[in-house]
Image 1 (cartoon, rainbow over the protein chains, first blue to last red):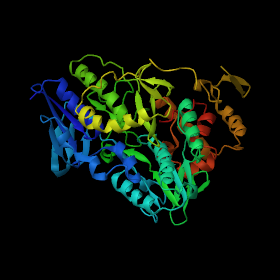
Image 2 (cartoon, each protein chain N blue to C red; image 1 turned 30 degrees about the horizontal axis):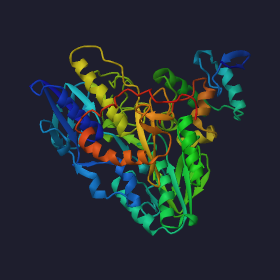
Image 3 (cartoon, one colour; image 1 turned 60 degrees about the vertical axis):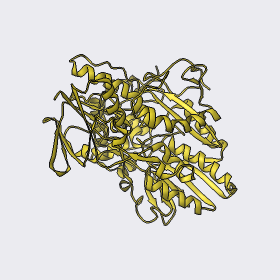
Image 4 (cartoon, chains in turn red, blue; image 1 turned 90 degrees about the vertical axis):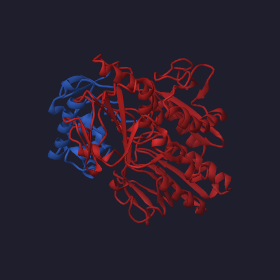
Length: 413
Length: 105
């Protein structure tokens, strides 16, 4: 039978991992089972564009097993819990699956009900999120009906998937209302629990400058405590209020529910703690976590999962061979930030190095931390790459797991 | 590296005033740090949070975020903000003599 590898989750991280492992190891020695609860693989970067009519919802969803190498066994089932000591996953319908190596790749879950009032009156009427497909579609209709007033984009708290997406939403809203000729009737505000527009100083300065240039008010250190839909106000825990006519809220995030039901697997927020450089669970060496499901101090973004994947597949091989793991994941993340008017900027960073200006992946590459049409084209091209190169587990030429230093300027912008 | 003097003892701190060596902290220092941050009296509830911060730091190498504090310290997020109005995670970490909690990106 060989080694049985079970991957929980077939989103970006799980699908890439399964396909990479299948490419790397001989199927006679190595059997892969992937489990997920439904058949909808959503291209999550596309959710940002749905509210503005720039992406069609049905184009963003594809079948999960069809993204997997045909040799991979796909099981569609609810995950009940993992018994770490028995090395067994319990699925709905009384199915048990035992494993030699387990990869947790079930991503992050939205928890809007954890914020007082967020899913109360007004939810789906003047309070929305675009972080799932139904929310993004609802918001599209709400924006179409909106003819003036105050729009507030709010990040409830960290961590969140794609930390730049709410900023991109604010930039695109500015563009969208200008296109409709009503920008002068719309006030835009961006509220964040951070003390600036972004976590790291150089990027925070660049992105904060863009908000100011576009006339978008920035409200900092605002941790969302309560949403009052009918009254049109967001309240922070320190009792400040931000009024709105339309609120676009990124809800609290947590890990998958079954992680909380699996003794010893997750942390307080149901994310899986793993070594930040090897991706291995501290108590159970045969367990790894990748992507948004992990509790790493890295950005929750598909690019991070991609860069982690290279290290993970290598490390699983070393683990099975009884060799020490290479502690080589550096926290590399890479994001196109859409800024409207057919432009985007690009940021590239890791655990130790903040997003710096310069070019990526080398001196002749795309401009970093600077708006350009080339970056916008890069963002659009990414969708094709996602389905045809990233998910199948192919390497991107010239773009490896380790963050490149060439082309970056260390002096502050 | 800057230093600050609490309870008559100089201690190394970072540019924002967080302890860089939690081993140098003593309980009498907490009252003085709290006063500097606008908290006149440390109640038992404050101390519940402060002690919890230090235990978490020893176990995990970083202080918890507000949300984790709210889930695990036995003090709700709402009460945390009443106790430490200018941001519980940062304020409590400073009073507890541990480095600034590492936020996520």
